[in-house]
Length: 234
Ligand SMILES: [Zn+2]
Image 1: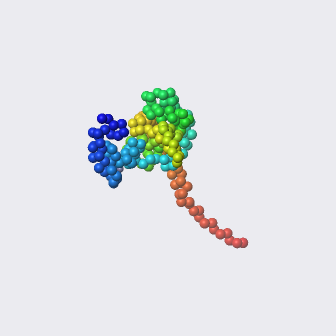
Image 2: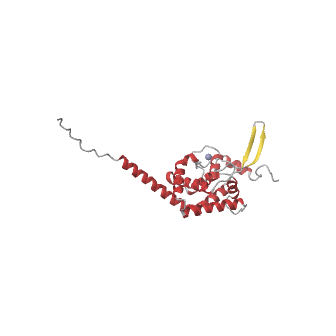
Image 3: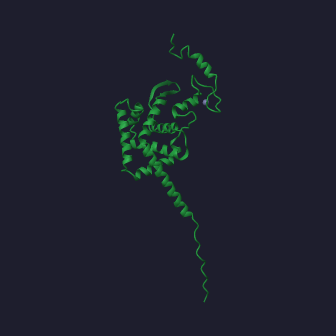
């Protein structure tokens, strides 16, 4: 007899056996969850961040890269690559807002649209994440892909789908993007914007080199002129 409130009978022994094992992540001592090979924490990271050992990247982590990207975009307002990237994001937002479910992460892009998140805000955020990751870390592709999506989704408050009222207050259940949606959104970004990201990284690196050269020049030893001879007193 099917059971609506839990795994069916045939799955239960498998789960029980699996949950007796340790999580696959090295040095993690927790037990596996359900039929997954990881514990709850690492499973969640794999789903949201693309890798069981990925760390969430917060805006404060890439604040410098955001400033770099903002300066770059400000200096190139008419750049063809920038304009076409913005048009691409605008179309993605608009189509999602119209309910076009063929758009990757349609429901989440529609939320950003409703919250008046601009294409420029999205482009700046994902470019800053890309530049930050290129600068400091070399994670596998999935982590970078998911990091961009995480930062994009966090640009506006999430919607809640249910709320429970207790004496102690309200508890809300938020709609979250699953792994499939996150992966699709990330691939969509990369597919279309990778050439621009590469240019952004080149430009930001060049700017850093220029700043370093300038600083080195300013710090260079100062040539000491010959001491002046004292004039004889007359
Ligand atoms: Zn674990």
